Amino acid sequence: MTIPGSEEDVDFGWLPAFPNVLTASMSNFLFGYHIGVMNGPIVAIAKELGFEGNSFVEGLVVSIFIGGAFVGSLGCGSLVDKLGCRRTFQLDTIPLILGAIISAQAHSLDELLCGRFLVGLGIGVNTVLVPIYISEVAPTKFRGFLGTFSQIGTCLGIIASLCLGIPSENDPHWWRIMLYIASVPGIILALGMQFAVESPRWLSKAGRIDDAKRVITKLWGASKVDKAIEEFQSVIRNDGADLDSSWVELLEEPHSRVAFIGGALFILQQFAGINGVLYFSSLTFRDVGITSSALASLYVGLTNFAGAMCASFLMDKQGRQLLLIGSYLGMAVSMFVIASAISFPVDTELSNNLSILGTIMYIFAFAIGAGPVTGLIIPELSSSRTRGKIMSFSFCVHWVFNFLVGLFFLELVERFGVASVYAGFGGVSLLAAAFAYNFIVETKGRSLEEIEVSLNANYQGRDKS
Image (tube, rainbow, N blue to C red; front, side, top):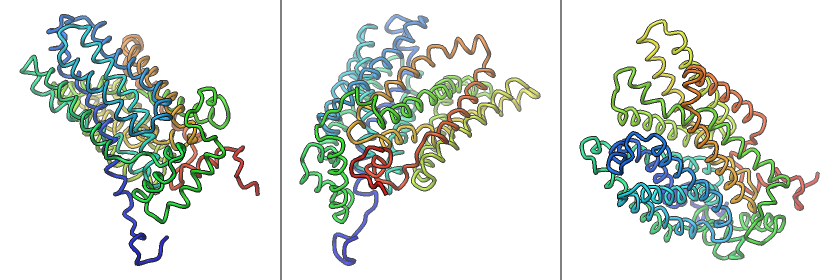
């Protein structure tokens, strides 16, 4: 603390970092927007471009997006190591903007696929980059609160795309306008990052100590500068001063343990059924008379948003581990409620209402923990040197299993029935809660450097007493 009454002792908390986090979260808004942008107009797009009724091609439009995201996630770690977060953000807006415009102007399937791949490429980079950036610029005390803005941005993007998609029901060409609009957040992101700060941790690794001090003063206050720089330098001396880490380092302790946790969290997240539940939610709502898929998706989006808002207030109070455990337990209960309602239909109306209740509970439970915590806890547990590579690896795992679940979900439903598949999701959710209890280290209220030292038994400056 500085001397009371001086200008430097005023603590504005999370406010100085907020504009930077908000700008970065525009990437997640784009992610959410592109998730929802094909939801309504896909029929009109298929009719206009000549693949109406071809489920394989419709699946290809979705899967090529995931393929692009996989490539983007794979390359992001090296980019952010060498260029820093700000320049990587700005560079990444090129495929995002170009992809949206090419998709909007598409007059053939090939052009649409090219545009979707480019957008996926950009989204893949950003899904890795945003959690890294937020974790490195946020004040320790508010890192959880600010970390949830990536999830909030995704929710708002989905809601925006669903609302903008309403005219597509009457205008078969409206999808082009929606895709042109998708280029606007990319432009805002590119311009906004020109005024945003660079990660002070990356600046220290790059040897730009004076710049790092200025950023720390701006974000966290002048009283935090000396301690923060000392921690950064200590970690750099232990890890090595070069900007680029090697993929081979992920096979070494403690990096291999964190990479295992990151990959496992995303596998469990996908096998807990979030994409399957979102896919089936419109059918579930239809059973109670909500026939508009856009309206059903809007209900889902608003529930997701409400859960993310709750997470923002709980993350730094309850901690990451407790939220993750509670989230997966809530998801498990929700899945078992739906499975029971389908398997034992005592009353049709009651069963339908229980299915709706279970779906809402599941999405809310996901949004309060399994969604936002997974993205935040991995960069928190990662070392400064390997953070980019571990995040790249973790999100590559995410995209692979996202694709696999989407590929086999309907086949599993046809073979075993919805109730059995949902019960399986509930079982995986229980497994995920147990995993979080046994493997997740609480990071609340600790700086990234403190976490790194505590996890690294070979840390040279560690107190052996």
